[in-house]
Image 1: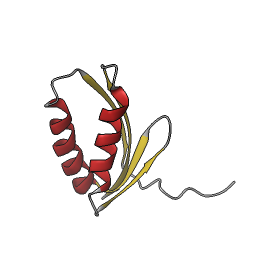
Image 2: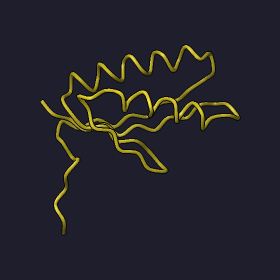
Image 3: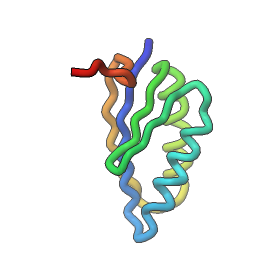
Image 4: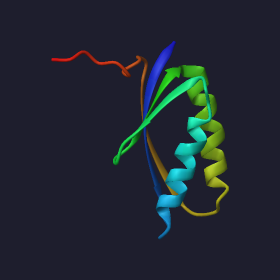
Length: 86
């Protein structure tokens, strides 16, 4: 089953940008998922098991930084990487 996930990451630290950039770069190393970022969030597209496996691993690593981090995830059971023009 394909799915789409929208991720917003909020590290509670004055150097928050470096944590976000590091997280996105690591997600982009997974060849089985598609990662698109913008100024507000990151979208991930692919097979549900591939995405959840990658997120489980990378979120766990992010939490090991010992700084408070909030993740906001929206998950839909559909591939929204290609939406029709209207």
